[in-house]
Image (cartoon, rainbow over all chains, first blue to last red; front, top):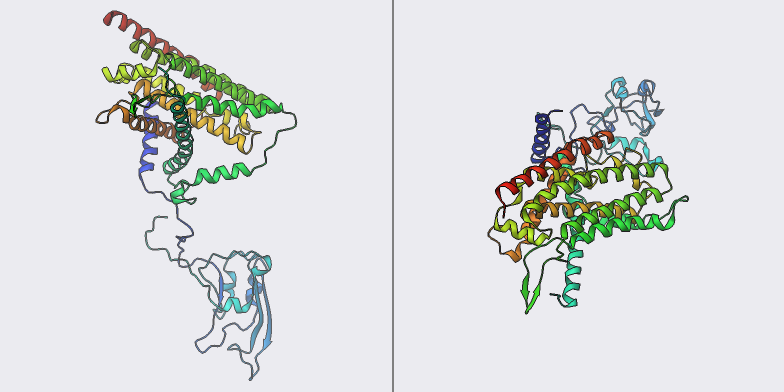
Length: 153
Length: 333
């Protein structure tokens, strides 16, 4: 290594010292996500309040990690939950097995399940990692910010 | 002229307090500076901007289990970190921080001990410090620690020679081994770095090698030989080794600042406030140490030894000879 190269090396470190660090100050600053980022799942409803999910279990068939459990039930005139003939009485996703591939979203013919942006899914108890239908119907409390055009990191 | 015992005691206390705080700040600044060199923040969570980090480290190390390995020599194992710290902190007593001040009719000198052979004592202390490494490595009862200690000791001895020779040029110009006289000499003429640029460079390189800092830190690098001579040390003993290393870094920076950069002499400020200038110079040299660590890759052990004996020593000797000739020819008194 010649002397000029070594001096150039010192210049590089010195210039890096003077520039702004690239660290994101998590948790005060959250990592921004792209629009099609696959995070926590969400079950959707129609505007009139009926659930979109009819319990067809296509998402169960599509899931490579086999982490969705669906038990369907007939819609009765007194107790109508979904817009079709049947509804999902039990809809559970085991988040510790999910690989967030998005195949369930692709497989669903009714756009009932999508992957949203929330990625802060830690729990202190393994049992709390199995998300039930009620948990999945409600959106996540805090969504991370969307990435803007030309963002540095 | 001896001072009252109380004043000596106060001086000693102030010196030790300054050294301990200096060590604490040096660790945080090193980590934050290293972070900035690497495009990241250093520690910035503990305390305001991370300045409580030394306290956090101290608490963690205090609570660690303090064990002695089974095959270890118990006494020497516990003695080695102490030797490391004591030799380093004692050296602070020899560095002059300013001209004597007069308070309440007492004349207080701002040197812990104004010995007339201060440079010699400093080199003797750094030689003693190499004992700490050898003791620590051998007393661990661990082959790899022993190897790391042996390598480290050989490295220290090699670069000690070059460091001593690089300083002799300054001593020839100042005609005194006392650090106070050297500072006064630089106040009278100019900083000795102008007269001894080669000597300064050799001193810096040898100083980096003497303190086992990058790029000469093979004996204690984490990925080599586990951790060299301080593999088996945990908790407070490890903290003491770290303290010895950082304080010796501060001492060598202070020595370099005093020998080559004018010590506590500086414009504008009166001599008794000269410690501010000395502090600035020490911080500059410490910045140089950290910059070297951030930039250069580690030297392999044979490259290190070859550089010390085949490059640094001849250049130091040549510097000595040339300085002697110039002084004898042009400055005969």
